[in-house]
Image 1 (cartoon, one colour):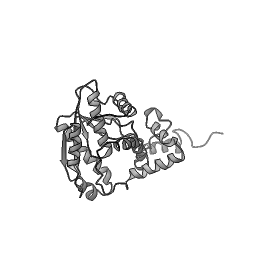
Image 2 (spheres, rainbow, N blue to C red):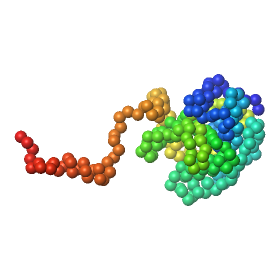
Image 3 (cartoon, rainbow, N blue to C red):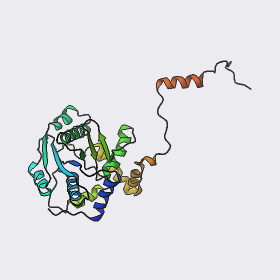
Image 4 (cartoon, one colour):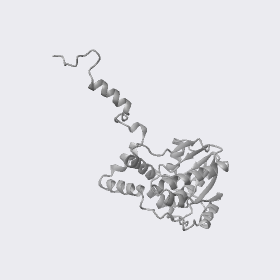
Length: 269
């Protein structure tokens, strides 16, 4: 397969790599490869970088079969990896049963947690020092808003983070690419991404937030860019102080509601 990316795509991937120091000479990078459009694009883009980078790094891929009723199309995934000359590991699990039946209150979060755990552990066991995930810019903005709406926290995922438990570094080289850009490029390839086998696809909190951002952006084109700007540390303005705990409230109550020592309780004229 002859690899090529439009100049703007390559520029955005390289910007992420350089700005957040995602890759360096001698890295062994394992890609979390679901077979969908995003992870397929990530694997393709990293292979192109590997061929043209001034430094050397190795690439591998791992696919986690979640154990849904419809199994993963492993021959399709193997064929794509073979065209890219990237070794593929397939890990079969029963994560779907755990997420959908044993942890029904939040299946998406449970599924993502266990899937990442398998990828990270596999990478560590195979001697890879970095794991690459295909989260793009839309994912970051949606996570940022979801955290506020559903968790009461101002946060999103980082482009790069070190995991103490597995001693691997997670990198996200697609953080400057929009989802629409990835979809548009994948449609130019002969490879057709594997559809998601998840039965709750399109019915999650993330999709609700995605639709909300989309509808608000149609009314005001600056909504999305403003949310993206607000993710930066230097965007934080004035916020309320942390909520006082019981002991702090008791002390504040004593100081404000009770007369100071030696005071007779009467206001001076």
